[in-house]
Image (cartoon, rainbow, N blue to C red; front, side):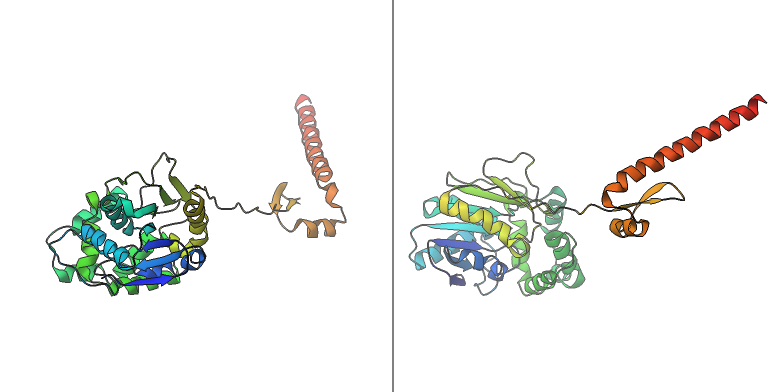
Length: 318
């Protein structure tokens, strides 16, 4: 049976992790949810502490059967699901097979990937030696992949955490979980008629977010590392949906930029940013005098230009 962990109390909520990682991915989000739900965090077949699987069976069908085994073992009649990244494909397979067991389904950063990354998946889906696959998913190559797809090339301590965790997983499972996605990650999701919510990252460099959002689509200010770096935004959307059936749109709060003070450069007649109050103090002026002084300065420059033009015209007449 799959390895799982229970936290919190309340209605059961199944958490399904993403590609190459374990249920440690929920360490920032779980504290925000466990006061409302009993969290059942699983590790998918062949990953983490879960048993390995045979190579001749479809991977995501195995995931669906293994998840159902956990539900029956825990004697849960209905539960909600929150799946992340490639785990959304495992959740999709489960919901298709056992829709009567799922009350709500949430797909966080669902793996409908961009065409350029689908090409990478197609290149993996071929007769490659295990040594080559081990070389691809190791060292700086894996770290670069994690930084590019999970963190939009931003350096973060979690990039090293993810890299180390992925390196511990079996290579065949890493490759199968990519290559056996429906349409190799390019098939749209199909979910039976149960309450469903798709949470997309507004800065996700891996996922092809729909151009026209539907009534069950929400965009949050996050990249593909949303469970780790944007956990408050995720919880802000998940909790109303699961407790009240309400879909909430979240936007990043706008930060007011301070107005940049100005000074008048007497040499070039230009305005340049400086500490405006300090400049006023040196000039012995009050804040309300800035516009009057500027207009006076502009008028003086215009009067000087007119005088020069009249002088030049008189010289030409003589």
